Length: 185
Image (cartoon, rainbow, N blue to C red; front, side, top):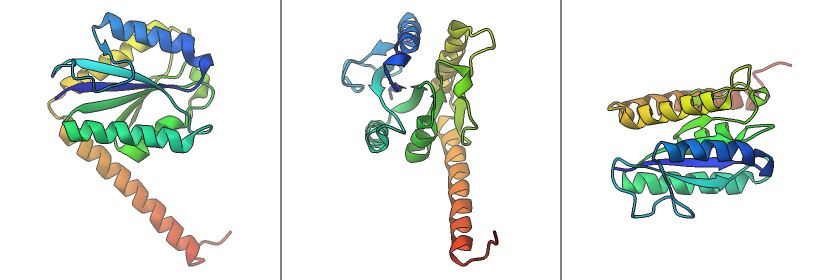
């Protein structure tokens, strides 16, 4: 079983931040996989990461396709996968990726002002008031390492999936009520 991180950024404006995240990952000995997150050189227990660009606003279908492909590849190989989104201005991609894949997502945007409420199951690491990026990136990478080491990984996944399934059921119920004109406006 390999541990895989998919690091996603949204635009060139995010590059200074993503470079800082990459430097920290490299300093932890995580292995960067250019172009192929599933390079066979990565051994079991080692953390590999790949970098991709994505956006829920500018390329929703492409972002979903990428996330689902990476998620399916991880499932087929029995690997553990965590997405890390480093997207500025508006980070709707974190919620989209979590809802479309069922994987853990760490939202690590370059600016704390982009935060909005995230769906259940998304670990959000906001920057501190003094914008201490290094401290918060370290905190997030430590959390990722603990998650990969968590012997209850599968149990936690089932709990998150059950919460998402319940939330989808609530939405379906609401849609049905709207369709039957049971909600007055």
